[in-house]
Image (tube, rainbow, N blue to C red):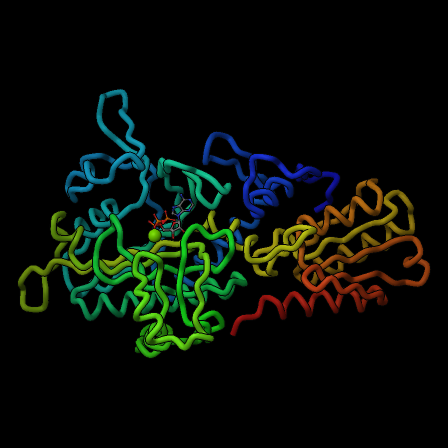
Length: 448
Ligand code: ATP
Ligand code: MG
């Protein structure tokens, strides 16, 4: 992609309305544009990141055996009356009336929709277990939408729902999602800690929130320090096998959200030098809630002995659009964003320091082809802005590597390679620059 033809409306000034750094940087890097309070358009740079996050979430859901569906954004009020949640949900639900004066709503979550699907299509215990998920826009009329996409009103969520015959099977489904989440967040370049959580309006008795530790987090969290750098399950983990050892290893040490925090237990269980009390950003939340929806909605199947059995359910959310901001909160500096390679909108920024100079243009074109042939996405700055401005823009948008080419280097056949994260710059021959960047990106993306 050539910057002169792309659409990336960067801002030089920090917008006053943005309180936290991720919101400021997303606006400055031309990733989003606010359309109404808590409602955003995703511009190309933002959309690319959003899609890459969604792809990683999808891959790990599939690996764990979940199956993708797509449910509607608009749901019927009658469905919510079946579960008893229509009145209970309160003002966060956007309620709408259609032309026939039927009550509908913009879904804030989809337990009712999926429970009706499974109820009407699964008859026998032989068809279990099932875990169905979708990546779909949700709407919650938050009292205080703020922090850009971190607390929007319209936001993209991955929500999965498990259906099992017994509580033991449901626990296995819970563990599969728990492990899938650890892998998902590691691949997004994040250190995330699963913490004991309150179940809130979703209900149930077993729940974990997955938390990024960051100063701008909206809640206070408490955990054992060792969990911050805990072991990530490998890609070849057998999701049909027993995952409870991984679950136990992660949950044997203290970690709790503010609502579940027990100060006396924390003091007794965690040595003082290992006690972490910090602000946290919730990026995922998983629940086991048994028959809370399946019982009132009549979601049951025929069991092995012919008797009808009400299904055990869990639900599993990831804030896909919140993650865009969350990753920036965890990874930036004074100059701008520092994207982990796995979600970067482009992997390399190729800077032409003298666009219009035939020799420089030719060298840049050759490098572009070589990088792209190696499978990298390249953003070429072919504009006629001054060098200082180009460097500032590249640092702001945070691509993992920059390859800088000017007339001087063209004479000696050399380019400068800059690593955005470390700031280290090194001059080397063109081919070596390509090899260096290709290897570094592969290394950055690697999670066992
Ligand atoms: P919060 O406590 O932050 O309001 P929640 O507990 O209501 O979130 P869940 O129902 O658990 O949220 O939704 C699953 C995930 O969706 C959350 O972990 C979060 O990442 C994301 N999410 C929830 N509300 C929003 C929002 N208003 N904007 C962006 N993402 C959101
Ligand atoms: Mg939650």
